[in-house]
Image (cartoon, rainbow, N blue to C red):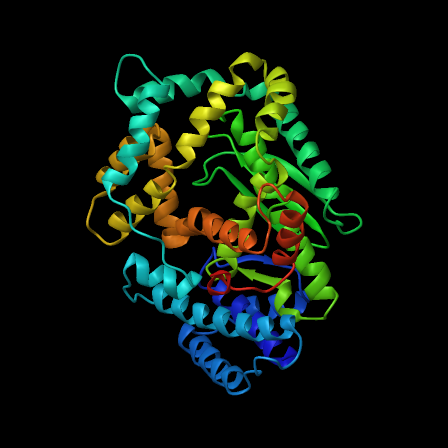
Amino acid sequence: MNRAAETYVKLVLAVGQHDADYVDAYYGPPEWRAEAEAHKRPLSEIRAEAETLIAGISAHAPGPKEGDELDRLRHAYLLRQLQSMVARIDLVSGKKMTFDQESKALYDAVAPTYGAAHFQEILDRLDKKVPGEGTLPERVEKFRQRFVIPREKLDAVFNAAVAECRRRTAQHIELPAGESFVVEYVTNKSWSGYNWYKGGFHSLIQVNTDLPIFIDRAVDLACHEGYPGHHVYNALLEQKLGRGRGWPEFSVYPLFSPQSLIAEGTANFGIDVAFPGAERTTFERDRLYPLAGLDPATAQSYAEVRDLLQHLGYAGNEAARGFLDGKISRQDAEAWLVRYGLMSPERAAQRVRFIEQYRSYVINYNLGQDLVREYIEKRGGTADHPQQRWDEFAKLISSPRLPSGLR
């Protein structure tokens, strides 16, 4: 399998020469990347070799009791990652797929479809939480503007959130020795935050400051991009599978692949794992609000609105589905996000930019979180059993499990 895994890694790097966003992280032998850059292979040739590799791996599928569980998961993982690669090559080459066909081919999952009535029920509850004049989107935006972190205080607030997320994570997960990351503040991006994993248990986390950053985003980003999210996920895969088992495939991370649903789903669910129940609001109120110069007495009311807004997450999928399937225009997609996602016009425009760049990737955040939550809770990792929840979470982010394996 290691020989097949090496070929897989080199194919990922080869696709990256045609698709700038494809290789999210690489920390394998530098000569493999140099070779890919020096000899740009045609996509048709890469695709043919991937198909040959798929056939070879399929022909040697282990039995249901053959080897240990990780070996069986590894086999299924490599096979599905390669199938996803073929689909991505086809898309880059001009093949048309519907939103759902694309997400299934790339991420091994299809998100449920929700109509306006689903979101309207949540909007009606928010309408009572945020009274006043103007439309609901206008009122919610005005309400949220009271909770913006001043730019000059952003670094202090974010560092405090990171420190707490790391403290909580380290109580339950043994982190690799020397792991660390640095934070940069950037502009002109379609995303709000990004973890660039560098290998050697180090990451670069970038926070986009194009738009105002609300107080809840400090914990969101610190957990999602850092602890126990992307940084820990990538570090554990490198430590336990890349180095521990000598599996070369865990020296590369192709963004448009099933791995991303696990990565984004665990990063989002990791917020609840680190801050169960009311613990998040308590921490924000007592630590972050004072650092940001905000009134701690307002923390509870903001948390109630934040929790309702999170239930609107699938509105982004519907905007993406309609827009990418050619059923609605860019303007219509932005208007949908304002009305049913309660985004400001500026934030809605940024989200459509993200949809244009990353397409059906949007399902990995909300569907991924839901699938990860269901998987962990079915194994006893419920909110009232926090240690079991941490244990199951740690197992998941240290394994090559696929999205279809979560069901």
